[in-house]
Each structure stands twice: as structure tokens, then as C-alpha cells.
Amino acid sequence: MLIDSYNRVVDYIRISVTERCNFRCQYCMPEKPFSWVPKENLLTFEELFMFIKVTIDEGVKKIRITGGEPLLREDLDVFIKMIYDYAPEIDLAMTTNAYLLKSTAQKLKDAGLKRLNVSIDTLKPDVAQKIAQKDVLANVLEGVEEALAVGLKVKVNMVPMHNMNADEIVDVLEYSKARGMVVRFIEYMENKYASKEISRVPSSELLAILAQHYDFVEEGYDGASPSRYYRMSDGYKFGIIEPYGDDFCKQCNRIRLTAEGHLIPCLYFDEALSIGKAIKEGNIAGAAEVLREVVKNKPEKNRWGGEDGEVSSRAFYETGG
Ligand code: SAM
Ligand code: SF4
Image (cartoon, rainbow, N blue to C red):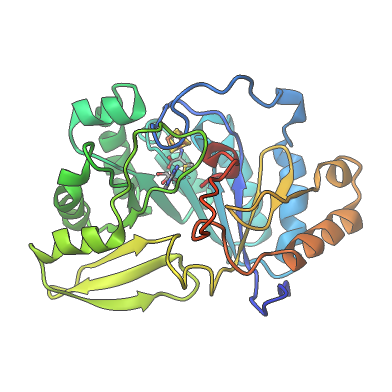
């Protein structure tokens, strides 16, 4: 079992399979990076799988595939099937912008994927064009319908921003609710890659907007989920992810692996160790040692709440959000 220095059990790994993306979201990758990680530096699916087996053997129970945009990586279903065949009981999920989901949802489900989180910040084509800097909405919505049709469980992620999509908080909730999908509103997290003019809608403001339309009660965190949940009087549940909040890190159970093998103990923490060399040499014991070291180094709290005005220098498209 993997236990960090604050007695938290680490049983969840998020794996970014590529930093590349077909969107240019204002809050994540508004401009194409100066250079991408060279393809030869990426871990192959066989190498990633070799490490995943180590994590599962050490007690990991939940794996999320993310990116960049994970569906840009070819043969992702084959990779998912490798994991599923090794440990079918693993909670195997993916986060995607859904642009390529229509043609891939069935294959992913057949391979063993259980759950999807899709990012839907708006239901207006022109706003989607503004946020992602591409005409994306029709493909995204078709992708979501297909994922639901093939029987994948789907949650929705929305990042509300002033003067952008804050007026659609209720619409996105209603859209999700009508399809049986839980929506989670993610507070915008500052990082040095995002467009400067983005303005975060804090959870207090979000709740005030929702309270004008619905009755709900707070249910708190659901296990180690980063989301605080709220239950409406008709039973529908929505969540808010507040990384700036005081108790956000208390139950953190996760680490992150980048596409080139950097193992990161916290989303907002610059330190990382590489498992790349050990895995490429087939040194399983060495990779397991790095894993234990990273878990041991997990900080108690992320740095978003810090008073020194520090801004994350690690890109979300690299760490997988
Ligand atoms: N491309 C996929 C997608 O967009 O769903 C997966 C990767 S993306 C980095 C994962 C999640 O991080 C998305 O839900 C996205 O909205 C969120 N995200 C990215 N940048 C963010 C930021 N600055 N603040 C809050 N959430 C962010
Ligand atoms: Fe791409 Fe996802 Fe980042 Fe948007 S949030 S730029 S879709 S990685």
C-alpha cells in the first residue's frame, strides 16, 4: 500500500498520455507551446503499462487517462484493454474534451473504460469558439450523446469564467441533469500559460447564482473526490472543485504521471521524479522505488492558497489537470 507522510493512502494515478491538444482553451493552452516533447521521449503504451502494473501491485485502485487531449493518441483503446485485462476491477476512467468521442466511444467502452469526464464550458457555439479558439461545440455534444448511448458513465466539468460563460452555469447544469450526468464546476486555477484576462468565478458566487434557482444542501466530499457535493431537493447532485479552499488537500489520494514519465506528487508543486529511465531499462524495482519516493514527498497542501501570489509554472496540459 502507498501511504504518504501525512498518512493519506495514495491509490489513484492520473496518466497524461500526451500533452498535445486539438483545442487552445484560454485557461489551459491558449497558444501552441514553443515546442512539444519530442515523440521519441514519450513513453510507449507498453512502457506506460509496465509502470501501471507496478502501481496496481502497490495498491492503486483508480486510473484516469488524461492529457492534453488523450484521444489524439492512436490506439488508446488497445492501451485501455491492456490495463483492463490485467486488473478488470480497477476504476478506469478518462478525461476528454469529447471532440473525437463520437467515433471512439464504442471502442473505448469495449476495451474496458468505465467512466468519462467531459469538459463542457458552454452550450453556445460562439462562446465555445472563443474559449477553445476553434469551432468545436457540435462535435463535443455529438461525442457526449454517443458516450451515453454506448453506456459509459459521464460526468461534466465546467470552468466558469466572468465575461465568458458565467451566465451559463444554470444551463450547463440543466443540460447535464437532463442526461443523468453529474456536473462539477471547477474554479479556474491560475497558471502562467493561461490568458491573462481570465477571471475566476469563486465558489461563493457560484453557489449564490445556483441558490437563485434551486434549493440544495451541502453533502461534503464524497470519499477522496476533490469535489464538494451538493444535493438539490429533487435528488440531483452537483459538485464544486475549489483548489483554493482550506480543506481541499486533506484527503488527497492521487499522483500524476506525464507522457514522458515524470511522476508528480501534486498538481501545484514543481518537484517531480522520472520513472522514464528505469522503465526504459526494464528496471521494475527501480521504478517502484521512484514511486515510493514520490508518494513520500507528497506535500501536505497545494500552493494555490498561498499568500505570496505564486502562480503555477506547470502547464495543465502537461500534468493532465
Ligand atoms: N483535454 C481534456 C479536457 O479538456 O477534458 C483533458 C485534459 S484537461 C487539462 C483536464 C481538465 O482540466 C479539464 O476539465 C479542464 O477544464 C481542466 N483545466 C485545465 N486548465 C484549467 C485551469 N486553469 N483551471 C481549472 N481547470 C482547468
Ligand atoms: Fe486541451 Fe483540455 Fe487544455 Fe482545453 S483543457 S487546451 S481541451 S488539454
